[in-house]
Image 1 (tube, helix red, strand yellow):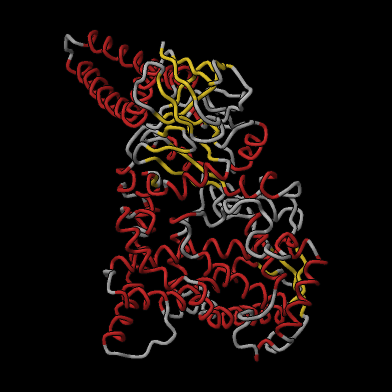
Image 2: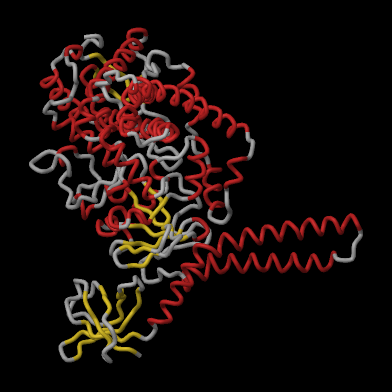
Length: 623
């Protein structure tokens, strides 16, 4: 047994040395000075172990019995996580196929090896059962390298810590899991078939994941494969060096000053959307307005104009070819997606993307069409730049081209990302804004009064809309919607190398998640009313950007750190213009207030049936 003397406070990184004078190491612990017992401690290489703590001659002393063994086990299990599970099943499936084919052949050929092959088949079945017993029963209890992390008390082999195999919206039970399980920033959670993931819950853990060690994590392979197959690569899939280069040269187009210069584009499209809504009301005053239908078209046009200087004209031509192809590109999630995700844990799913299924072919054709349109527009912008034309209204592509860094295929990939992720997230945020305004007439009146005071009643003479105006309640309301309804409530990452979170060693291949839904509603960060929709939390000195939260990592709708959403300012500006135009023109009453809030199955925060409103003019739509 080795003895280590802790020489400084337990609440800080503490130097400790072996009593026999061996070299010093670094240790951290959350143990208070007066506590004794068996506690976890981290050393400088990331290994965690337990030691018995007591006070001897004024020093806190740790007795460590199994440090070397712990290192060996942890590193072995790291290898086990990243290699053994998938490799075993792929080899097992291959040998099983050969055995079954052999049995069938022997049955028809009348060979002498049928009995032997059945014995092999029995051995393969036993191996599979043993594999299942190890990973689903023994591993979570005895072999996980994260045995010192808290985990919910209730767990089943089939569903893990969740109530069902595939929850409709996984973030809903996840919030309850976090609230019911005390932790210090990391939770060990099990999903279907006891698949292990870590959840970062505290600002310190989220900071380590998204800022300090941001480049140690990557998207899951299945996500990369699917997105690359249909829309191309994006910033999140690039190597660390390429990511930094691309983001550095894209960032000038997404700064607050540059986005502010694009506001007149957003405002014109918002007015055009309001005009289209007004035309429908004039034709049928009692018609329920499908907010998603209109905002989807307006947002698509905005991305075309602000992204590439090209108007897709989907507001005026809702069924044009571009929108028809775009709609084919956006898949509605089904239970099949969940099964594919589960199987991807055990098998390489790249071949699945190449299966000539009708739907996959349709999506691929639509992607090719959109990429062709995008490529043509990019080439036109490049020719104008080469010719020295003044492109004073610098769209995102023009700014990127001017840097000289990007190849055409890079820009096409980035624009395709804006068209999918950027369009969907902004459109969904607008829907939830209409939902909350329709539920809260008093807030609706307050916001409309602020807009009328700042913009007047004739929006046609207001060239830039909300730009440059003092509209604190509009800012507050939109921020509160973004807090309460994050588009992607759960983000899943995989450690692509050994790393650490709050002193815990995270082996390569570990699945680590963070949840905007959980963190955005954390009462320790937002106060006791964290679950209440309250725009006023964003009003007051120093609150306009923080909502009064106690941490910079309390609002994760757009992520955080060097890999956060590059289009956050773009999305906010678009949302504010759309909301300002609609609310300045119409009074909103929800058609389906009791059912609009029901969530759609999947990984994004969408209404299942959509949000419909009955509108009344508070001013002429063409004023």
